[in-house]
Image 1 (cartoon, rainbow, N blue to C red):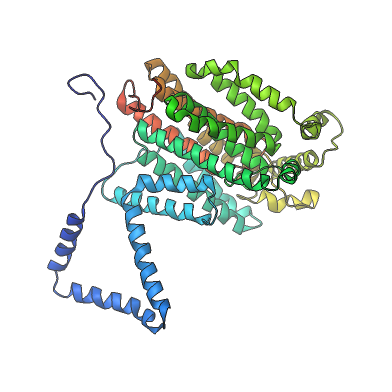
Image 2: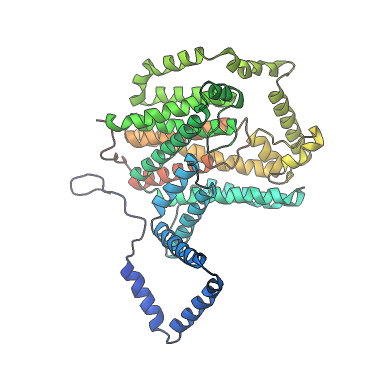
Amino acid sequence: MSDSKGAMAPPPMTEPRAGWGALGTALAARYARSSFRLARDVAIVAALFLPLFLLRGSRLVLLVGGAGVGFAIACFLFAHPFPTLLLALGLAYAGVPFVPGITSTVLLALVTARLVYDLLAGRRVDLGPALQRLSFAVFVTVGVASTVAARDPGRVGRSFVEIGIGAAVYTTLSAYVDSTRRLRIVLVTLVVGLGIGTAINLARELSAGILGLAALAEARFTTPAAAEANASAMVLNTVIPCALVLAAWTSWRRAWVFWISFVLLLVAIVISSSRAGVGVCGLVVSACLVTEKKLRKHLLWLPPAVAITLAVLPSQYWGRFVSIHQFGGIILDRSLQLRQHALEATLDLFRHHVWLGVGLGNVVSNTPRYMMLPLVAHNSYAEIAASTGIFGFAAYAGWVGSGAWEAWANLRSLRRRGATEASAYALALFAGLVSFLLTALTLSVQFQWPLWIGLGLTNALRRQRERAGGDIPSVVGWQRA
C-alpha cells in the first residue's frame, strides 16, 4: 500500500486504543441496565476487603497502598502490551540485580492476557505457516501421549510449563511486532539487555583483580540469561548476529553502543570456554561478515584482532579444546566421557521406546539405570527422540525446520526485492536460528527462550514481507548515512 507520492504507507496500528472516556461509558452502561448491580458490586468489594480491617497499625496502609499501586501499574502495562513485552525480554536477558527472575514471566503473562483480550475483541493473529502449526500441534499431542511411559510425571509438567511460556513468547512477538521499526526495537532490546547482563557479571568477576581473572579461567563465565557456561554461550551466539547487523545499519553516532555490546558478547563467549560456543561463534560471525555488504569492510580488522586475542591466551585455556581429538580414541576428559555415556544411554532409550518415548523431560530420570548419574542427553534432538519417540522427533524437526526455512525464505525474498535493511534483519534472525540449531547438537536446550524468540520474530518478519508485497521501508533516522 502506498500514498499518492509512491512512498510506502506505515503499517496500520494493531493495538486498539481506548481512552478513559470509553471506560467510563462502559461502566455507566453497566450500572444503567440494573438498579441493584452497583450495590451488589460494592458489597462484593467490601466482603473481599473485610480481612484487611482485621490488621492493625501501618500494615493496613502498606497493604492497601501497595495493592493500589500494583493494580495501577498492572493496568498501565496491560494497556501498553508492546513496551511491556520489551521490558519482559530486556529483564530476562539483562538479569538486573535485585529484580527477581520471575518478573519477566509475570510481565509476559500480562502481555499474554492482553493478547487474549484482543483476540476476544476480534483481533486475528497469524501463528505461522500451516506446516509449522501442524507440526507443533502434533508434537504437543505426542508429548501428552508420552506421559503414560513417564517415570516422573512432574518432569513432564515442568516441560509443558516451559513449552507454554515459550508459546506465549512466540505468540506475543508474532502479534505485536508488526513493523520493521518494532522488529528493530526488539533486536536492540535483546542486544543491549544481554550486553548489560554480561557487563554486570564480568564486573562482578573482575572486582577481585588478578584473583578474579584466575576465577574466570577456572569457573568459566556465565550470563544472567543462562546459569551454565555452555548454555550462556548458546544465548550469546543467538544475539551476536543482531549486534553486528545493528552496528552496520545505525548511524555512527549510535553505532558505538552496538560495537561495545558486540565486543562484550564476544569476550563472554571466549571466557566461557565453551567448545561448541566458540566454534559456532567463529562460523556465524564469519558468515555475517561475508554475506552482509555493510559488514565486509570490517573483514580487514575484525578477524585479525580476534586471532591476536586468541593467540595471547594462556595455554591452559586451550586444554578443553585440545581434548576434542580424544573422540577418535580413548576419551580421558571427564566432561567428554559423561557426554558420550549420556548420549549412548539416550540413544539406547530411544531404541527401546521408539514409539512414544519415555516422557518429556524424563531422560534424566532414566539415565541412572546406565551410569548411576541423572544426566540429560547433551543433544536436544536425541533428547526429543528418547522423550517422545519417532513421531515426536519428526514433529519437532518439522516445527523447528519449517521455522528455519521461513527465516531463509525471508532472507532470499527480501534480498531479491532490494529491501536491504529488512534483509539485514532477516540475516540476523537466520544466523541466530542456525546458531541455536548447531549448539543444540551439544546441549539439551530444546525449549529455551532463544528458540521461541527467533521463531516468533521470523514469523513477524514473514507477515510484514507478505503484507508489503514489495520493499519494506527503512526505519527513518536509524539507517547509516
